Image (cartoon, rainbow, N blue to C red; front, top):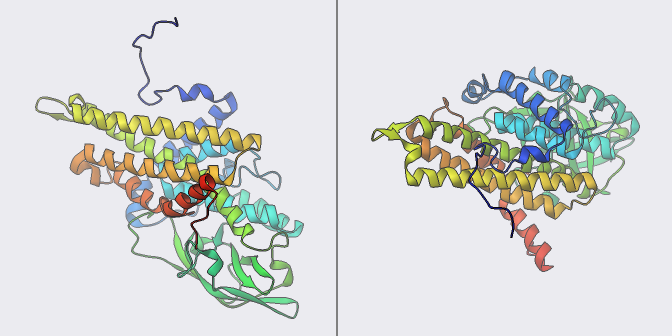
Length: 394
């Protein structure tokens, strides 16, 4: 027979002892980002959210910490492991999904395609200042009428002598109106191509999207390209077709499956602390059976989601992670995080809808995370095809 199982003292914030699964470098990086979030993000993020802004100057601070393009090698990038990058995303999203989105877009959507598919000249021109936060990038794929079906994009580029002429509109572009460079995907006679577009190029305009009730501490824009003339070497030479933008999205989804657990953890911790202190009927609401069930469900979701994220991070570092497994993580971790946020809101009652607590901010943010970088429905069909061998698309 095995050893007797005895009741013990469990850390309610790390019930399964996941911290012990990290090595010293991973813990050091995580703790460094955690301190940065505590000192530079959490004191002000509710104000940014309320005002609908993101301070552009934070980019250089993030660059100084090595957070921008951190999982890329060379050109001023930190060259961390995938797991280290994921842990950083968890801590950043503990602060706010908009903060993690900034880092994801900069590194995985703007820097990665230049790093993976760009010319040596493009890499040397853009990657070092982007890694330092001195240049901000954005990623132009989604259009008003082409979201889940990027192959139907209407933005097009045509050759004009040695140059390219771009026309079209991109929508829901994070960082668009504060960016120095945009990676824009367009239809060409050769197939879909990516273009490195400095945002001061004549004919390029970015209009900030207003009226958002989610991701308010993040800049979202519409990009309009009207006869934007680019030199022939503005095209990314290393890829043709949807493989280019889809590989970038897969990079971003990996950060999301870690990041969502940061938002979930923030909501769980807020609810646990509140339930212990809130007195009703002469005792803390944490003593009520229904409240304990809610807290347990949240705790289990956060621990399970972190185990999934860590497992996928290890697989990526080993070179065995598949795109479908990334979809698994994005699909389940985001929906679990959203449920944790909603449950936390119910525990906090009316206080749960105020910005004094992080819960409603995370809850509304996660509604966007649930949709972007592949909707929950799209990831469902990706997984369905993976297990049946039958495509349900189209």
